[in-house]
Length: 115
Length: 114
Image (cartoon, rainbow over all chains, first blue to last red; front, side):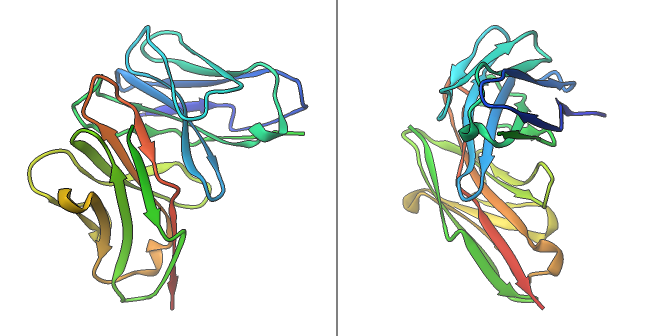
């Protein structure tokens, strides 16, 4: 049972380069999330998708775009990477479209360094 | 808008001592509350959650938390710390609404002294 799978696990980018982080879940969950984790700041929500076909901004959306490709997949794109986007990125999914209170299940993270 | 405040970025206790990690939330509607644990270089794992019903919630590894609406708190406790409890702990809140947004606190690193 794979759960939430993120690729790649590690990535180094040069300033200005673009890349897409991939995330897929096999739990038939409705909601999916992208977070970034920085020391002392916990996890901050970048974007989320409450259900297939919808996406919404989180706390720190600037510099990112997302695509909910289908129910399973939710990708995060950096169009022009900046050193401030150096972080660990986590994808998560949950069963609820809203209100059921179920928890999020997390992937193992992508460690991104922008030089 | 919902938010979470975790008091104390670092807590250190002796092995066998009580663990208390504090979490206060802000929400305009009744929230769902979660505690997660993260071990080094790993993803997040759910410890426990409060949705409705009993306000004292028991989780894995001997942890429990109590939802106190009047204090807008959801503190995490464990009666006796073990060396294996050393990790980072995150409190999170989801509002009961049409959106499924989950907001996390800044985390508390728990260290255990032998």
